[in-house]
Image (cartoon, rainbow, N blue to C red):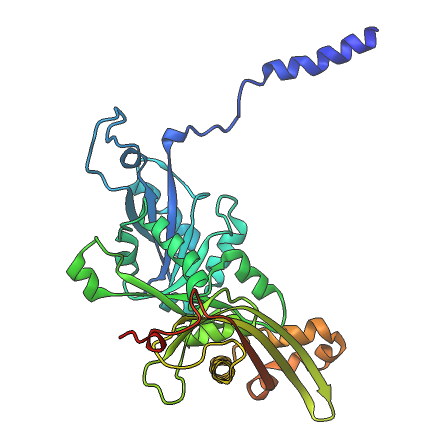
Length: 397
């Protein structure tokens, strides 16, 4: 019994002495950073721009008394440094609160930095304990400061607007790859594949006309990388091809021109199943890519029999398959031209035939530009929308 009492005392006394966190930071002394932008400086340094949420504006008060005010929902500050972390630390002399990085939702990289190499920024996110690797990332052409200063009419802050734009666009059009810092680490860590990061373009003329009422940028296309360095651009249609070939597409709209008609038909393509496998024979190594997609007619300003088993539907399916095949071939051509394996064909060989990869892996940069990829695409139009005929067939104008 005495031993139990002594043990209980030894446990309770330290607990009674613990009255809080030893390194507590009061929330009112912190400023949450919602977006970060990285650029390069002449001479090899780095330029960092931070968009900081303004809690006083978001709660409706300027002085903490609940009164109304015209304060912006965010504030933008920038600094230079010899390293990305040094530049981030140099933001402190110009801010009245301790910057808190765990809420960063968006990371923007200038084209100049991307072409020089994003390795230092990637290293920073991997080591700094506050930074989160779930942030969405994009490469920006144009004035980074202008983009960071822009407001989002439908969202609380500019950063939240960018975050939602970069997240929802791939769900609607598949022309922009939604990439997070974590995705980039995975691409860099595995052999035989390269990074693809979405592109945002600052529209200076619209900014000057509309000031801050309209976000001055558009999202679409992507930057191709070799290692940590950008080597070129892919347009929106090539990103669509990448999305379908790699099994990352959600939805896209295709315009199909039926025979004898001037106005194209809109076809929504979804539920695409893809299968890819390496083939190794006496002729060398090649890749077989097969896709089976399901489509739905969204607009039909033409004449024809929309019965799902009709020859007219069969012809639309063949044209849709050829259109999708063309997009994938365009993506592959751009990828091989830049020698950037964004489809991960080398990684496919690494996973499916490790012995073969051991033989050719060291020479993949020489093999990939001329690699043969056999593409087979099948499209099935399963639905015609909410009606099965056209206005012309009903005598409409």
